[in-house]
Length: 86
Image (cartoon, rainbow, N blue to C red; front, side, top):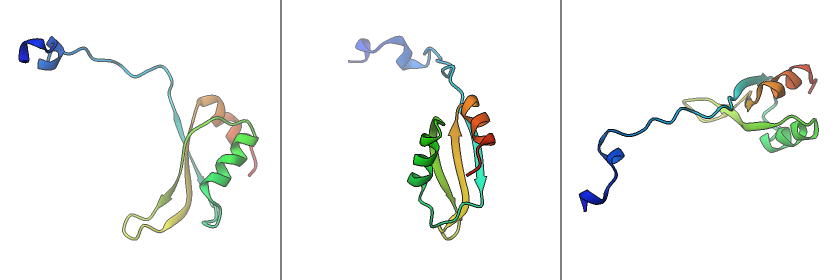
């Protein structure tokens, strides 16, 4: 059974560097907790901003949502987002 495994299985594997796409994180402060993340994502898509990930930050101890939203997107989308007034 062990003879059927490739050499990569025993520590001599090939390392794969990350792909060329790099995401940038933007933190948007002052977003009321009554605003859902899906509503914010829809608003950004309407403005033609391509987002990779969006999530609301929470308090570590209590788990309550904060007024900060973390948005991951490409460099071009960051520039569009910085010019946008929400």
